[in-house]
Image 1 (cartoon, rainbow, N blue to C red):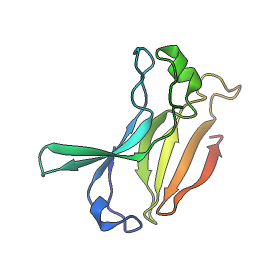
Image 2: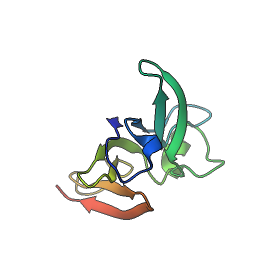
Image 3: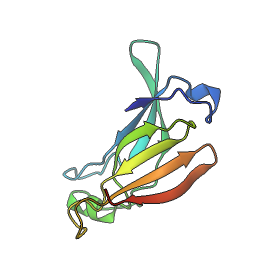
Image 4: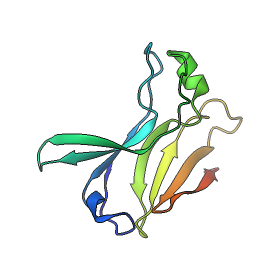
Amino acid sequence: MAFYTGEQFPAAYQNVPFAAQHGSWNRSTPSGYRVMAAYTDGRRVTGYEPLVEGFLPSGAAGGRGATTAATGRPVDVLQLPDGSILISDDRDAGRHPDPAVARALLLTVNGIAAGLRNTG
């Protein structure tokens, strides 16, 4: 989770926490697989809004079928100095021959700018 303090996104996102929802693997109806903006009144959450979604195709089966069908499983968010957001993803964790490989998406005010691979 990260509180947005940059200036690249609209002012409505200032100091709003962004939370990665990794996604369920054992629910009959899949949930998560997205990044949410959580709005607060200072001490408690008053509402949520999807910031980035679409990692799970609609109609995906529940249980391990959801994990298999997902194109991404967000893990965390990080704000970069320019105000863009980096979303880490472990969708391929345990399946790639090199365990140091991780994926991330760079989110800018204009949308997802690039898929990045980091080999450690």
